[in-house]
Image (cartoon, rainbow, N blue to C red; front, side, top):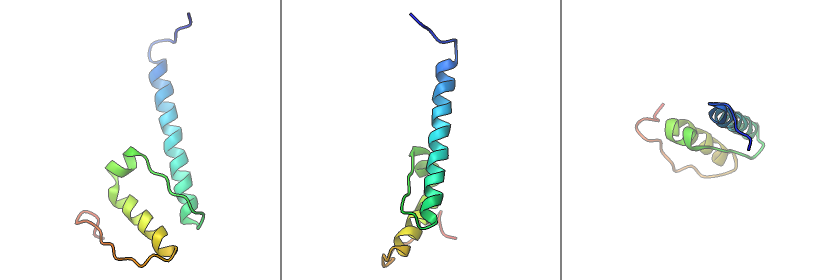
Amino acid sequence: MRTRPAGAWQQAFHSAKQRRFRDRRRDNAAELRNLPRLVYGWDEVTQDPCGVYREVREVLVREGWNDASYPCKRCVP
């Protein structure tokens, strides 16, 4: 039976988490350059809901949505 050194599982998990975050940021940047794709994970939605709102709203308006939304009190510029 093979085992990993102490902490190796945790390191592998955090490395994968960092890759997923980097990939989502890359995908979102592509969307903002008119390449349709926004991807969010739990961290972005719970830690930066105003940023998520702004990005989603920007894409929807760009695609022709008649904006009737309004930001929450925390998001007001």
